[in-house]
Image (cartoon, rainbow, N blue to C red; front, side, top):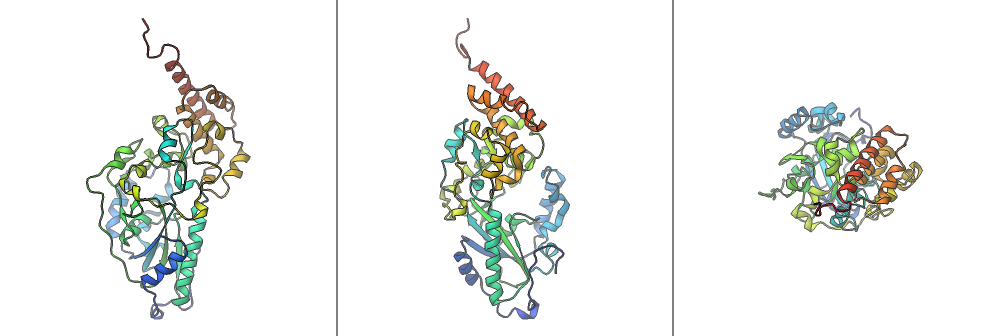
Length: 377
């Protein structure tokens, strides 16, 4: 089958053995019992997506995410990624948690903003396990060779989901659904079953450009085109080194990811709260104090982010991000004390961002000092 790991095959998985192929309604029933909010089926011909992918990579919009360039066009060719694949089962699961109101947290510079998808347990394991169960249910009726993907391999998941009718691609490049907005995770099952393909749905963005206008760093450089190097999610999660100074102030208090383009989207007025307990807020990270988070030790970080998507960025990047947010926070003695305590941090990366933050706070202190903005005659 494939040289890739985790490919599951059955002795009965040959083209002539698929007489009992389940229909999409049956698959949706199984998926619903497993907690998926929607499931559909896409073909594997993504040829029309290839020019856009090539252009995006050539412009360097992927930043330091070298794996994207390394896999190249294989990302747009499911049958090359997993030989034998003829269909892709696409699935989505809502994640929007019952958390502190996002806008209020963003407006309070003393609090830390964590992207809402990361407030609960890491979705990768949960979705992968549920997709595995769905694939097993299908196997019981129609043995097939398959591989499960959850945002962890070179898969054009939004393209596949859009082609299967799960929603349409918004101008922020995320998938949108009229009834659920964009607050959901996607997962796929690559299969050799000749399932019936579903048609795509019509796009409903029209002339709206709310997401483009809302991006703090101008990362959405054109409709349907994101320069990851400018994106706060990339800068706070994927980027391993120093955050370019031009983006530090616009980052504000966002210490892990960014939801601004989604928060601005009118379709997210219809977003549904998740019913998955694993996606519920953990450790009060929906509105935590920046000063308190910056006081965490590496042991605190490991313990309190265990099982969370946040865990993978490590303590150094976590500290770097909070230092930037403290530099943007309202001036206070507590903020200065927190920053000063980390001036001799073992990490040169953290020290650099702490010094920047202290300088920012110094300027803010002068600006807000006695007589600031008043009559100086």
